[in-house]
Image 1 (cartoon, helix red, strand yellow):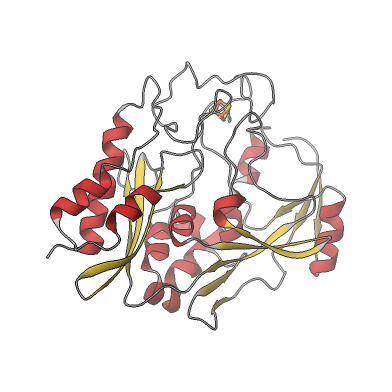
Image 2: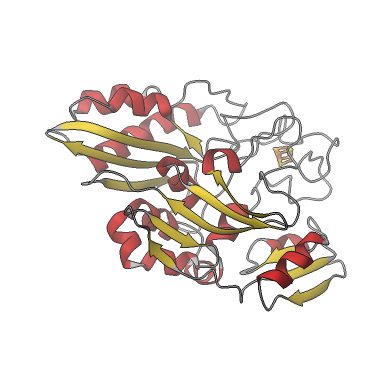
Length: 326
Ligand code: SF4
């Protein structure tokens, strides 16, 4: 591990001052400390923000949710309002990491976590994300776990978060605070596809920190849930996953929110699937036909062609679980 200095921010002003000077924010530290041990990350200054007042989950005026950036994954998953209003969030969190990690890791840190591409974590391998311009060892290496959507010639790594897939499906908003004040970013714009700058992963300005994630109100009744497919039953990242939320009234699907994980360089919203569902009556044929659209535009690599079919089956299965069949 490289030498670094450590400071604990007593309030938001202290945090932003340190962030403006190039300090890296840390709270749970479950990703960043690992990467520092492996010398993938070499921050000069860490700024502990865990005392900032960002620890609350609240219901918004319209019936959405605002989740403070420092609420732990475990607290968020267990929160009665999260469970009642958006079970897809609780399910995604409970299928993530381990109980110990969920107790430490925060919602803000979860979104900010970096890829699990093994070449990224191997400092002897070429990796444009870790070392811009060095190449991408995964392109012609062992790329079974890598992305099939949103890739570029410079990077094919997946975003590893489960709850970010739920946030993408629900069209969340990220609340940010920086030296220039507060702003909001649609979740879809916050996490960046690699393009030719895979080292730039979030639309963050210098010194900005995440203060909350807001989930918009959706028409009720709303059923939602998360399905994760992986090589082993626990403590494993997704090969594919699907977050689904459906509002069905009078036997017709009025609203549909669908996104996939484990397949995209960012959590992958599936608007073609959503469009296929809206205005239709739930049926086995509908789930299958909608899921056929899940892999549109996919560019599989040598070792992950199986993900195309697996993605469609994951989406179909989760549509059936959430939507039932009449
Ligand atoms: Fe690095 Fe991305 Fe290539 Fe992995 S896929 S080696 S993270 S550039």
